[in-house]
Length: 106
Image 1 (cartoon, helix red, strand yellow):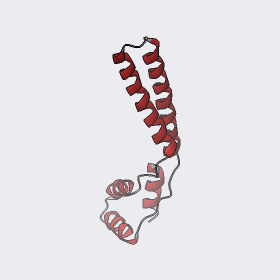
Image 2 (cartoon, one colour):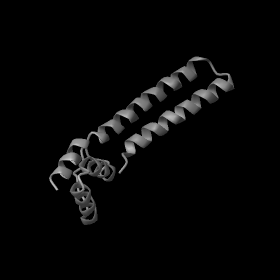
Image 3 (cartoon, helix red, strand yellow):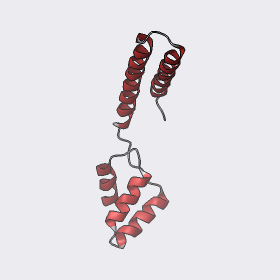
C-alpha cells in the first residue's frame, strides 16, 4: 500500500515546479521562481525520504501451496539458484536473504 504522504510530497514538488515555470514566463522577479524551485526540492526530498522509509520494512516470506510445489520441484532437479530467483520475484517486499533462507528451508 502506498504512503499518502509520499504522493502528497511528490505532488507538491511537481506543483512548485510548474509555479516556477509559470512565474518565470510571466516575467515576475527572479527570486520567485528560485524560491519555488527550492520549495520543490524540499518537497521532493521529503517524498523520497518517506518512500525509503517504507522500503526498509521487510515483509514476511509466504508462499502458496502451488508456489511451494514449484519451488520443491526446482530444488529436486538441483536448480536451487533458480528456485531462489523465482521466489524473489514472488516476494518483492522481502529481503533477498530472507527469501533464500525460506527456499532453503522448504
